[in-house]
Length: 201
Image (cartoon, rainbow, N blue to C red; front, side, top):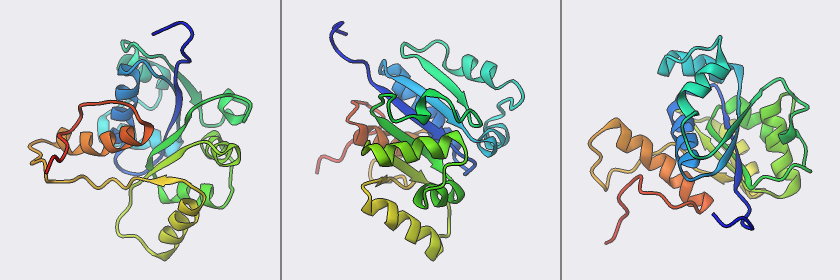
C-alpha cells in the first residue's frame, strides 16, 4: 500500500442474535484485506459466541487474539461498556459500521436513538455523522415492530442485508451459505472478495 493511501477502518458490532459466525467471518475477511477493524461485542453476543462457536467468554481478549492475531490487518477490541472509547465520538474517523448479526433489541435501540452502550452509541454516531451503517438482522419470524424499525432505519439510509443466503450457485457446505451473506456485506463496502460465485446469466 502506498504510504499516502489512507488505510480503511471499519467498526464491526456483534450482538446476541444467532449467527455470530457471520460477524467472525466478516472480521476475518476484512483483516485479510488489510483493513483495520474496531470490534465491539455485546454481552449477549459473547454468550452466543460461546454457545455457537465454543468461544471462551471469560478471557475475551485472548479468544480474539487466538482467532485474529495472525491476519495482516489489525484489530482493536472495545468492551461494550467502554462508552468513552474512540468509536463513541464522531471526531474519530472510520469508514462506517456493520452490525452482524443484529438482534431485534439492538435494532430497536438504534432505530429509536438509544445509546446506552458502546455498540449502540457507535451506531448512533454513524447516523449523526452520515457515515455508512449496515445491519444484518437475524430473526424469524418478524413482527410489525421489527419491520417498522427496519423501515425507519432504511429511510435514514441504513443498508439492510438480511442473513438470507442464495442457492443459485449450488452451495455444498455451511461455509458456502455463510460466505454468501458475508460476501454481500463486502459488496456493500466495495471490498473485493472471492467468497461466492457470481451470477453471470
